[in-house]
Image 1 (cartoon, rainbow, N blue to C red):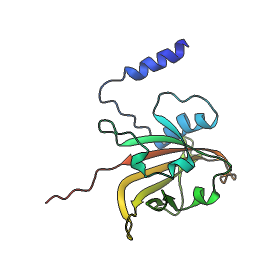
Image 2: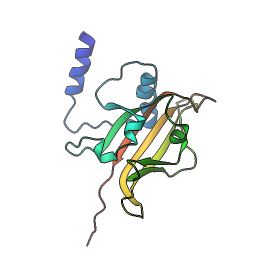
Image 3: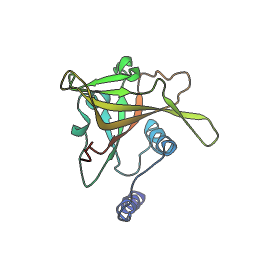
Length: 174
């Protein structure tokens, strides 16, 4: 109990202006691996969410805005019932067609450890709103991190770490 209280105290003693800015490698090694192994993750930075819930809502309804937050982190659980098509699709429809997440790359980017071994893969997605007939690119992006499980990359259940970002709104300079 004493260790938990000390950790909580450390998180509240961070200096003003402190930002949580982990690298891809740190996200995988210090957070995603722990989550996969059911080891508690420090801090309250990550929110657990089911894959169905994530893809049922537009991004702005998934996050809580406070001050100038522009990044949010989620652990997405993909269970055995999760559709393989959702996991591997380049486009993921949100909220009955009101928008969609689209991957803008052919293959996921590998993430390497210090020894040059592939430890995970990262997929980059952009959110498009499509309330009209023409989709509109938004300022929302997401990166999904999956552990490298060797040849069993198409696993039936497991955790995915997601970093969702809200960019600046597009404004005219005139």
